[in-house]
Length: 123
Image (cartoon, rainbow, N blue to C red; front, side, top):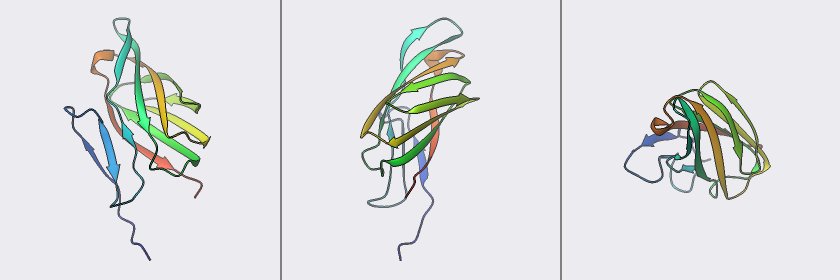
């Protein structure tokens, strides 16, 4: 029987991936790009980021992204999405290998960072 070890989150602002979590070799992991600002309205704005889901079981995948500021809306990647506080919840019946996500945030959009994530799978 394989022993479960809790995923560790490592964030390095100097790396293109932004957020990477894993619980051992060959385990599920999501790679998230650093947000790219696409609209800056002075006090709010929009940014895109890419999720690499290729190491995940795509069946009924739900990913919750956590940011350093309030998110008013999130969408993309063919996901059903909702935003609440600092979180965006993305749900797929069958997730793609990569997904481009757009978020709208209240605050200095140039300071937006994804600070972590969690996920659940049907399997």
